[in-house]
Length: 270
Image (cartoon, rainbow, N blue to C red; front, side, top):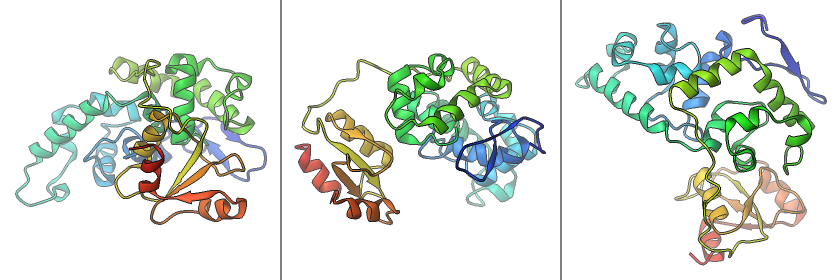
């Protein structure tokens, strides 16, 4: 990589080359934005401007630095222009942000895996990896063959995961996260509400009326169903929200039944 000097990776069938260094300066703003986003660690209040200011001030050099920020660090980085209102004191911004950061430490393992930004690993794959391996230590030791035992994890994604955890720069980030108290494990004792959706495979697309993407996934799984990233002949239902992507067209071409949030809840008997 011309920015950080770390080796880049290339996947068969793809044109692009990727730098997978979590602390790469050229990608840091994007990496941090993804890490704190709603579908990942969900750190409320850490928008693009705040992220850029913290990085410019040298307070955040990788995603793990978020969890060692002090009130003084935030006050030093955030200027008057970054306040939502003229009356909002910078101290309030700092206090709210520190509270949100502390709250995010209790996020699930699947959210943390999503937040790491491993190439090809979305929310659904992250959930499958979390339930299969139980913690980051076990996942970091998994080989390509181990990973491909999980449905939906092909050779390219498996290689991307192994490569990501094999990088010393990323290992350093994980160690810093662990020291900061961010080291969740998957609760294998999680019980299901019922098995009304057992044997059914769902794909969620678009914005649902009341459930977030993560919320829909949890609802389906808690009722015995399975959620996958892509539509296939094995898909039982496509759960459709507003502004859907190409998944709707594929579902129609394969004859997959399309339902909304209300129909999903009726299926589960909710």
